[in-house]
Length: 235
Ligand code: URA
Image 1 (cartoon, rainbow, N blue to C red):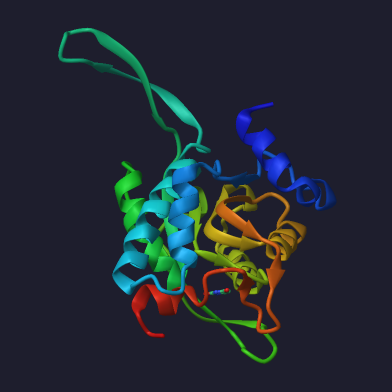
Image 2: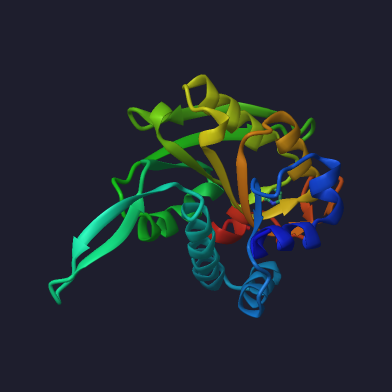
């Protein structure tokens, strides 16, 4: 068992077994001191908009790297400046990002920095009705050929799983197999993770933290508040 897998089981002892989630599908970033301090800044209600955006990008870089590490590679040989052939590797699949608006766009810069292949982004606008919490799709636009790409869904908050589920449904209707979907997320609720894997057992999820509770208004608790408001300064 890899260190990663041990970590998942240690941090989410019931989650993985209760929900039949295979450890290779749920990736929680290693909870090192640096990540913990970054997440504390995001959770602190006194953090300024500028710092919130800066720290989001730092956590986002770690998440995108972890997501890209899940991709298959193919052998690629290059000639180094010393004239020696180096037997290296590069990603064997094409990747695109799909941001769930508006908060998901906050992770796009990390993807631009992290992914060295041909870059493309799709967008999905799903909004949940505040009283029923049911999601409605308002807009979507995807790169040509998305059905043969690995799709990184960019969404910093996974609360009830409603918007995430609507986004995955839309991608599946556009020909993207569940196996090719990696949900990239900063903070997930335990129930959101279970809901998502119950509905879509073949996706993968990469997150930086898991919280136990949802408030009566479906915010993650302790959480970090409304991500979009804090990132864009609209609170
Ligand atoms: N979306 C947010 O921005 N925050 C939450 O706590 C839940 C969903």
